[in-house]
Image (cartoon, rainbow, N blue to C red):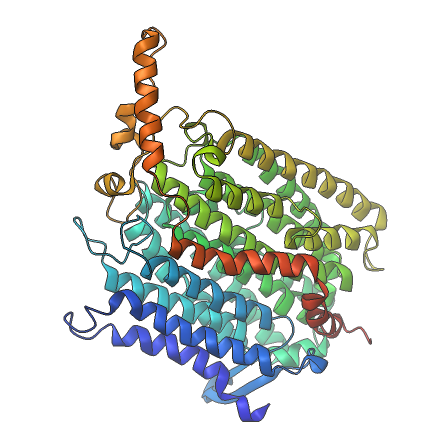
Amino acid sequence: MSGLSWLPVALLAVPLLGALVLLAPPPALRRTLRLYGLAVSGVVLVLAAIMVATFEYGQAARMQFTLDLPWIPGLGVRFHLGVDGISLPLVALTALLTFLCFVYLGVGDGRGQGQLLRPRAGGSRPRALVFTLLVLEVGMIGTFLALDLLLFFVFFEIVLIPMYFLIAVWGGKARRAAAIKFILYTLLGSVVMLLGLLFIWAQAGTLDMVELAARHGAGMSRAVQVIAFLVVGIGLAVKTPMWPLHTWLPDAHTEAPTVGSVLLAGVLLKMGTYGFARIAIPVLPEGAAALAPWLGALAVVGIIYGSLACLAQRDLKRMIAYSSVGHMGFVLLGFATLTTVGINGALFANVAHGLITGLLFFLAGAIKERYSTADMPSITGLLATLPHLGSVLTFAAIASLGLPGLAGFWGEMLALLGAFDPAEALSRPLFLTFMVIGGLGAVLTAAYFLVMLSRVTHGLPGGKAAPVPPDTALAASGPGGEATGPEDSVGASLAIGPSDETADARLEKTGERIGLLSRMPDIRGYEMAAWVPLIVLILLFGLWPGLLLSLTTPAVEALLGVVS
């Protein structure tokens, strides 16, 4: 594949150059700005598709499309890029979700709040938004391509600044506090992780991730590996996020704009779990074996905690955010088993979560746009008023709760199966206990999604607060295009009155609410264009899991040092 070693560079150069072009004087690209990000991210998606099409699947355990050049010779740091069966799905997922975000933003009539690229009163800063998303794409893809420890850290950090601005500039009412919390937590985790990476470098004498993985810890004592795994693991756990280092996530998701939530859940969380698969487990196997019981324990606590927290939520976006804590718990449990089955389940769950939760946040944004609120008790009867939107929400929810035949099932099932028969160095009774607790978490996952559906999709249309048509909702939106809340919208004035109102008065207000409901659009064309690819892939991986597992299994066996 040496002839295609330009592909990783192109995947980084295209969005980077696309972002730099936006630094030109403001009049440039003004008329084509709405489609500019779509075109640039479309080229990146095409490049990712070429990489998927030309990948040698018979050698998925080997690094392909590699590029290895000196970067900082004095320190031995190299610009080393490449992909294998573990990183290829994540590169493709990143390119796809970024492109779909630009479809959601740049296509359509510009009336919906999701259309943040349409300049309007208060300023939506469309040029800055496109620039931010393209820089974010550089960091996300670079993290999955990097094969040098310091290069990995550089890309790992690049994503923090654009995500901070996505939340702080285009987020909701409490966006600044959420953005500060996000950057403080993730920067602190990154500092800890950097110390661990430097410690590995000092002990092993190299930064090359391929060479370090091939050694499987040779040259480092058990004590060194345990310390390094602990330090690096803490840094990765913040980004994952793992309980109890998760508290930045609900606020970030709740306040982020729709596209920010999609990329945060669909890609950024995967960067933490990818670090376990690429660095922590293969480079530090003895440290992984020593700390795997603790990792598994924290994972199952996160599964139960996330599920119980979801049951207590009223805000739809916040509920989906807490569900990510639970789903990432299954990913970490799979890694903790240190088996081919468990790690395969973790990697499968990574991709499935990116697809399903990305779709859920798209849907949450669409619902918030139409109702001017994400408060679930205020949104009822969705299947009756917006049947297509309600149906897609139902599909995404049952996919996330792990219904067999959809992508969400296989990752969780394989993670639990891995816990049933963990690696020989681990305590089987302990991991059987983890399996039982994880199974209870799967039941609670079904419970909170079914409760959400009963609140949102069933019942009398309208709920406590009437929805606002798109043109009215725009007037009540903040600078980021997110509704400022039902109390600030026209919809609040149409809420059903107090119980002491006469029956005729309540009937009149109910009629006004139903009249507004009839004016709300169901799924728009640009929304369908952004969501259909995710729906298709959720079905495809659910019905044909071997498509992904055949890609990851050889790489996982090499990661664990298993001879196939």
